[in-house]
Amino acid sequence: MNSLYQQLSPTQSTVPENIKQMIANFKALSNPQTAAQRMLSENPQLQSLIQAAHGDPERAFRNLAAKMNVNPDEVIGLLR
Image (cartoon, rainbow, N blue to C red; front, side):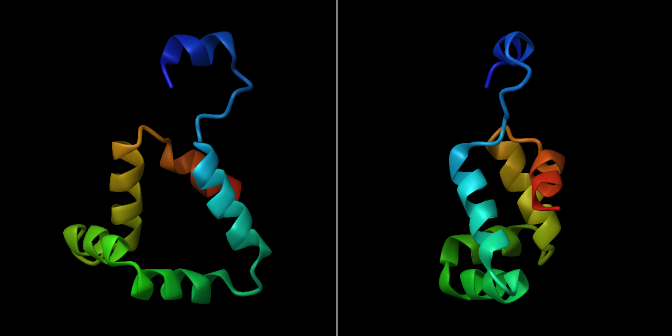
């Protein structure tokens, strides 16, 4: 989202809807850690992102957020 639009509409979140949906799904689960591990094992794209980040899931997340022009701290704040 462009910064001028954000300034004109400060209440508009910069987190894309698909990420919001994924966050809602995690919150609805009784054990999000197990779900995340299952997603990693079932999704080769996620595995390759983590391998590219030298096995560090947080770095992989932050790299992907940067590619998508999303503030990773905002996403983490939504998860809390």
